[in-house]
Image (cartoon, rainbow, N blue to C red; front, side, top):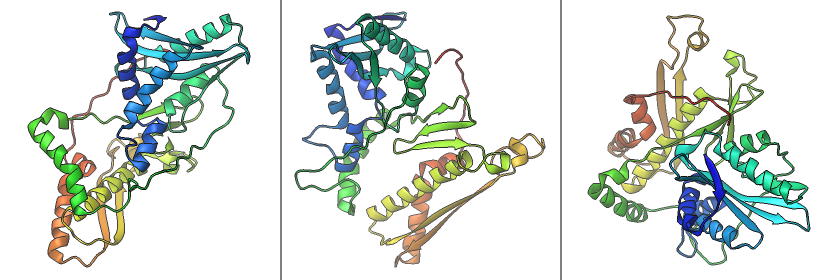
Amino acid sequence: MNIRPYRDSDRETLKDITREAFQGVSIEQYIEHRFGMVAGHDWRWRKARHIDDDVASAQAAVWVAEDGRGAVVGYITTRIDTAAGVGLIPNMAVRATARGEGIGRRLIEHALAQFRAAGLELARIETLDQNAVGQHLYPACGFTEIARQIHYALRLKPGKEKGADMNADELRGLQAPLKTRYREEPAAARITLRAQGALDAQHITCRVDTGKALIEAGLHPATGGDGLAACSGDMLLEALVACAGVTLRAVATALDIPIRGGTVTAEGDLDFRGTLGVSKEAPVGMQAIRLHFDLDSDATPEQVATLLKLTERYCVVYQTLQKPPACTVTHRTGRM
């Protein structure tokens, strides 16, 4: 792996890495989730413009990481404030296919070496609370957490916030072009979903970035946990509840089936002898999962039957549990 100075021919590659790497950990994305696109531009366009700002700054230096074939796989942007004696790292990103190889650490170490060579006294870097990887990497590189910020945004022009009530026509209007595209381009509908967690160096926990909040998973009290961290078994059931609830609401909206509210409950039977290795006869996984809906609705029995049938059919988590996919495990060992 080689680190070299930025060249203008790198600009679009760095923007592409930025759009990929900041999924789920960008303020711009959270603004779009709440208010929708602003001025006709999505969050990826806005975040990628940070590269233009970093490159244009007279006080900035940008460094890129190349793999053995000379392909750019990461970058780090820096700004030097000589008068204040401070070096800033506004942005850093590594391609998903190159993560876990220590590239992020190498880029940070390179930037810190440049700061020291410039005679600076302090280095600063920021990350969102949702960025589990950054919160693991930066302290590992010697940074100390100082404070946390809260970001606010205000819509200046009237508009409908995302998440507001949606009717059937609006839902069909949003989904129609997607369905058309997926019929014409089946490959466009195949997307790899990815979850990422950072292992804690001192505790039996894993910090999971859900894209909305940081969740710390740990042992269930039945296996020695203290009950303060989330149980991954609970998280599995919560994923099922969330997916089934969203799917049911979407189906009800599309079919104009009146649903005022309700609850979705998932229960799973688990024998902890299996995961603790107490009994070879006890299965490690859940033996049975039950999904139940309590609906506040005046819908007819026929409508409810259709609603539940389509919810089962189109709920991704439910169908994954019903028809388990092939799973593989890989690993990489080294400094991270």
